[in-house]
Length: 262
Ligand SMILES: C[S@@+](CC[C@H](N)C(=O)[O-])C[C@H]1O[C@@H](n2cnc3c(N)ncnc32)[C@H](O)[C@@H]1O
Image 1 (cartoon, rainbow, N blue to C red):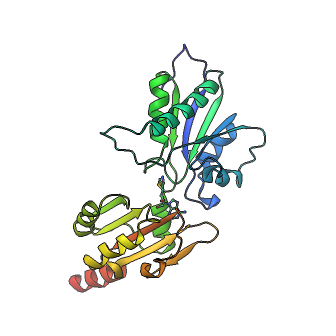
Image 2: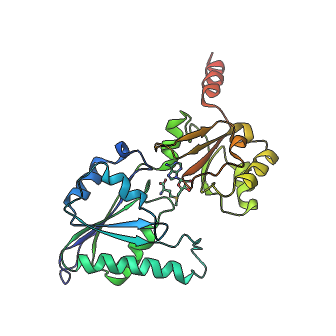
């Protein structure tokens, strides 16, 4: 996006860090972090660490950069409905911290876990910043998403051929999840950590338990893969847990296709 002459030429770059393994940080993201004077880092809890910041610290020396932690409310956002005031307040506070620095001409980066295009605070923040400073020069750098990383880790694709693929937060109500499970060939369920018993019931009902794999803390220390997700019921799952449901095994597809061509 083009900048505005009335604003000193500070910039805001939102970038995806990948889901945990520092080797999945892109070269473009590394270059943007190295060029920045300030990192505004998101945290889900007031006292916790920023996972996105922890990832970049393992790759880039940030000792010469100003680091500003910002806390975001984890409350659900309904795009077309009324937004919780704690949520909009947290976007506002973070935008204020960013704009304070870009107005002084600083290059600011905002790292976000995985890819910014998937259920990330980054775009709410971008919209809030641009509302307050419409001429701000901005860039969004993609990252490797958690679902892509989970898929590669278990060597099972998200979508192939004529597959219909869908991504759903498991916090959606049962009806929406069941409809997606029935309609799509491959489904990635995010934010499953608090919903597993409910999801297991839906997977039993739709006869998809055997097509499901649960990946916890993918690419991070303590990574666990449950080829039978029922084994994880009763475990304290980490927030970084994703359930992949794929109705057709990709090896079976090759066998079937070859058979047809013969
Ligand atoms: C708010 S969403 C953010 C998704 C992120 N923007 C992305 O591209 O992956 C958070 C969800 O991503 C998934 N997730 C993030 N990191 C993960 C990891 N290392 N292993 C498994 N799932 C992960 C989990 O389902 C988690 O609840």
